[in-house]
Length: 396
Image (cartoon, rainbow, N blue to C red):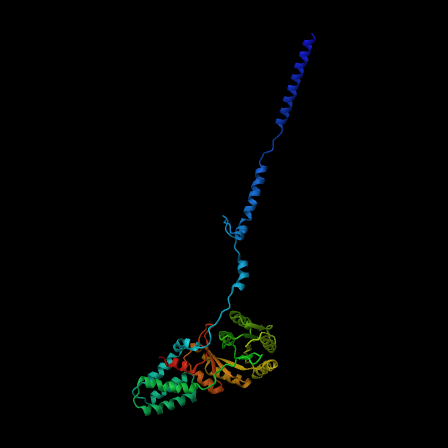
């Protein structure tokens, strides 16, 4: 009896345990199970993070990437000044010879017209009048024209019959005599002792004054000189910026002041900079206003006096536009009365057949043409050579 009771108790316990286990399992299975997606997302995020920085790493380390490389305009702008090369101009020697073809094209009408007239079998009064008119139209001036025609008349009578080469020789001789190859056309741009030479550039705005200043800097730097530029034309908008551009091209220091400031102060500072930098030449671009002769005289006089506190003014170049003819001559006379001009820079000579302006301006002012502008290019300013000039007019 006791054995049977014990067996019943054991079976009841087992059944009770089995029921409890089933109930526990049922309770667990009834709870919602969260989706197992979070771990993969974390892994994907970790994998994508390096990919986002891949282009920058690829640019620095050289690895390839499927993403397009980022644009870098800021870096290019920063590097541009470092990579910009200073332009080294050619020496001035022979520059006008190199530009002779351009001069010949612009002056061809004058030379051809004169040669054709002088080559005629019969030179009557009508022909001589045409020759005289051709010379006057070329802005040669009345007195030089009369001198040339008078000399030609005499020599033609002596020669009698004339070959083309004789006619050309006669005309060349007379034109060269009027241009006057014996004038001293030396540019005084060499330093004296520790002091730089100072060149004042004067002229009416619109003649190419500031451009001529920049081109002259190129000429001198091409000849191996160290140049400082002074932007003393403080009254014309952007004049200093224009000169700065020229200076940056060839590595010349540019001294400038505030717009509307005192030109004499800028000129003084430019000379001081030239002394500090041990420059060979200081070129000062002055204002070109012709509002009144008195105002111009006061301004240029002050600039010169202030400069002479530190150095001497070695050259005063008057810039004239060859295309303005007699109007340019009147401007030249005003400047000649105001300041002691030592030389003339004649611009835009390539754009006119009026090459006689070289003769007339020298006659009127009593100073030589030292520089001529034969185009708009940076290296189209050349030291004036009388023989190359006359030969270009007459052609080969």
